[in-house]
Length: 307
Ligand SMILES: C[S@@+](CC[C@H](N)C(=O)[O-])C[C@H]1O[C@@H](n2cnc3c(N)ncnc32)[C@H](O)[C@@H]1O
Image 1 (cartoon, helix red, strand yellow):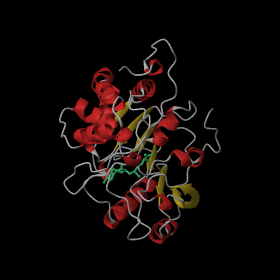
Image 2 (cartoon, protein in one colour):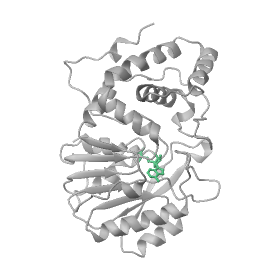
Image 3 (cartoon, protein in one colour):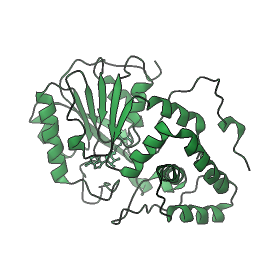
Image 4 (cartoon, rainbow, N blue to C red):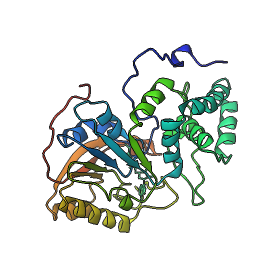
């Protein structure tokens, strides 16, 4: 079996705008108009300390008026950042590794697909290219595109049931690789990611949400939880950046602690209606407001996603 011809790369064709190449819990695709509207008029270095799927980064790159001169992209999830680094630097080797996974999976019947999925999921792969191929493969074929690890840091999401998952989207991966060329990719705690930010830069922070209730939390992106202490550290970091006149934007849940903490410190605090795409329970994927907190700086204002 070979992959469909439209998935083969046409080197002479212009690449499309890069889109997030992974589905990620907390992904911001639907909030993009609100986020772009609140971006500063111009951005020298763009910082995204909680990168995940990087929806805002890719939207900024797709829009010439907003494209930053360079970007520092960070996430504490090592597998995730290894994958971004491989996509940026070793795309051909990644294609070579990912294609056989995609082909083997797609030619199986449903039962054999599940067996194949679990065999890849339960193997520990060590080189960066293998880690990247495995992460992309699992992300496209697991239940709901979820990333979740157990206490030992092992990926534990069950098999999904997509009829024709686009496991190897060569064109988008090429566009993503190009968009990442002028980026620094790091895997540090958010507190250490933007120490060098300056007033002409822009820092967008999208941490694991402050849980609205004991049962609503989803913070297992890495093997360590993001708790109240971390939310406090984040608040101090944001205060400190605001004092240095660095444009900052935060998204978080509309938990009363978050609202109170930022409103009391004279930020612009706005509730934006949003829909959670990833929740293991379908009935909890309903409308939930998101909170956007911004420091005060000249903004670009409403902008079309296609311009
Ligand atoms: C809500 S998600 C970000 C979603 C992203 N904005 C998107 O569009 O897909 C939060 C991310 O923060 C990362 N994270 C958790 N704790 C962290 C920490 N202490 N420092 C940096 N990143 C962390 C998680 O691995 C996760 O990818």
